[in-house]
Length: 252
Image (cartoon, rainbow, N blue to C red; front, side, top):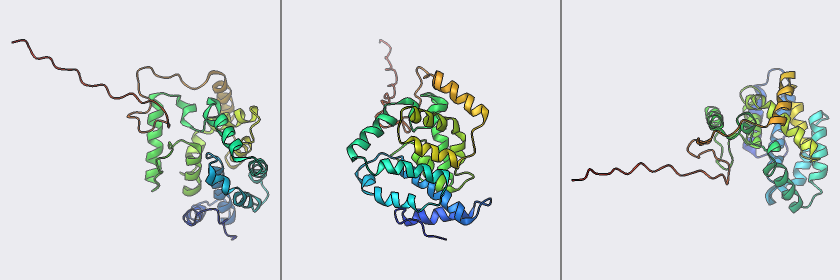
């Protein structure tokens, strides 16, 4: 079995191999490659800060070493752009695609629940799923942020690990369509991910068309969609708890 690229930390390489042993429908090499592709997608979909930009050549080498596949072809096309752009241009493009456009937000529960109380419950369920698998996120991002979901899938394997990706398949389709329509090279990463998952059903595609036309569920007025604010996205205003009413003593 060929070694995983040095850009992947040792603990992740070990856990990817552990996950690959749980895949029964493929060979160990195929399973390891599948997990590595998910991990690469997770790394490439985070904000392109100075640390990520400094690792671009190593990441490109890891992609080049992949055997030919649909996912590898899409990753190669993305890296051809990612490795040649100036870092500040990468940062601006990322913010425009993922922070300023709702139809290509990377927060997956938004597409199912909008900014409603049900979304807060879905975020809590995801966090509990991670803990049950023995994995704690660092708290820097919400549990439904696509890079976080992809990292969990790479580490936990195709069953419980990829279940959140399958559950949010319709959101992934919408992100892919939005990035393609915008002409963003990031659409290659979503195309790579689509090739690693079971194909969408007709019901999925119909739901994506409806979601693109109507948007996610409307906000429930008067309810905090993130519970006590624990899962609110960075920068979201969470109103303080209302103070209890002041008791007025009876006039004596």
